[in-house]
Length: 241
Image (cartoon, rainbow, N blue to C red; front, side, top):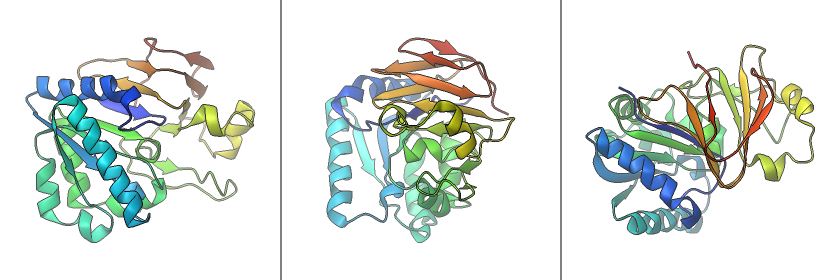
């Protein structure tokens, strides 16, 4: 039994996404997990202490709104990710949320560590796993370099190896034709490329075969399936090996 899996374009911990995040917690609770909201800020690990405190408080405020406990895991380096005490705190939590920042740093920090193993095991036994922006991008086998588009992608965490996600799609990619995005992002022919707008997510609920769009804007299917744009409540089926 796998838990729910959410890929979010932007908006982690914001009031506009509270009901969605509550639904992910409820999914985990239904699968026997504890009502605990785990914040994984690793992608922002190179930001200033003030900025990290901002993310910590933003997540706590969201958990308070939802009436659940929150745990902010200070996983900022590989040393932190290898700390078994932090990995233990993952166990049986209802929602694990990897927030935004640098996806390349996130992957480099978590790959092959006890923390990533704990995340995968908790998800496989029913916990919900959400990734926002960098946290969504990192779940692929490879991560494109948006700032250096001519540079080859770097390795991701490989949970969804054939899927590529462009977060903040309606903000940062309005200027580029979708056909050009497919080429510039080095997307293999056998992969699926989707763009997820801000304050929008695509989620595969525990036990479901389909994904559902949730949020204010759209999810754009750009490659690997017929081109289409999906809005809140619409479903899409694609298999991930």
